[in-house]
Length: 160
Image (tube, rainbow, N blue to C red; front, top):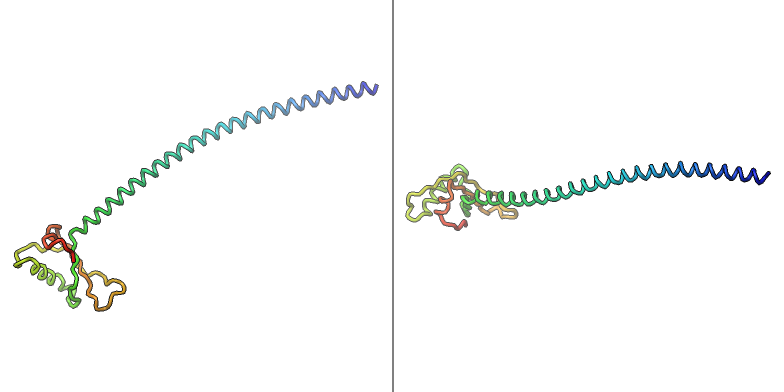
């Protein structure tokens, strides 16, 4: 009798254990299936992000190239805008800003041999700031912007 009870209990335990294992196995299979789906989705998202990253890198490289080209253009434009400028040194400080234009016109006329008629059109003229650590007796340079590059060239290419 004890043996029969033990056998029955063992069979019952085996059946319950089998049912539990089957239920747990079914749950695990569903969880693994969900994990595979999530992993596949994550892989797809990773591939998409990687492609976007590569596109961004290409765009950044392209933008850097464009910025470099634009900086070169700006430098060229700035250099060209200064072509008609001339720096004149050692003009006495006693000449006021109001009299600077007439002084420069006379100075430039005398610079051309024989004072021949010449276009002396100036757009702007002004004294430059005194360099740092320059003595008080230092005469500030005068920057003159001629109306055309040809006018500037007629005085020679030496800017000093």
